[in-house]
Image (cartoon, rainbow, N blue to C red; front, side):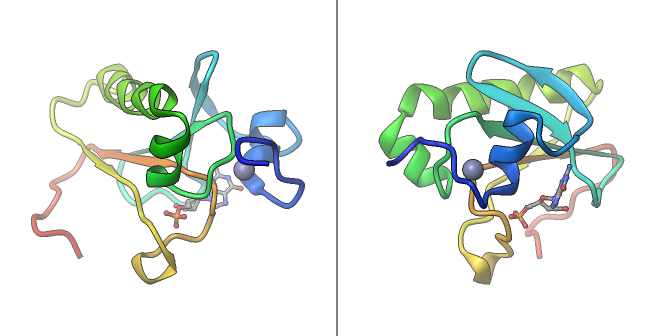
Length: 117
Ligand code: 5GP
Ligand code: ZN
């Protein structure tokens, strides 16, 4: 069922504490942890505790939790001392999505080119 933990989902396992992660913030609905393969000095993933395959599906099913993810992205950046930062939701394998549990990448700490690659 939508929102239920998925046995084969890496990020559901991180939410459950079954896979370790360097957690930087946690709320009732979200977890923020450092990306294992950072692409910037600050590279934190903010995920909903609920399983939804991508950001749009999360927003459709649980808009208040999608808002929590965005609010937490800002708080992560603030906590890292970043005035400028980028929030990315890769959606679909063609855009680089490899984990099909919605997540925001929070990137900061270096120059961020626009347009992105
Ligand atoms: P995507 O490519 O789906 O947008 O982002 C998935 C992200 O998860 C990647 O940036 C990847 O480095 C990160 N990732 C993959 N496996 C792990 C893991 O076991 N722990 C952590 N902390 N990050 C991971
Ligand atoms: Zn999941």
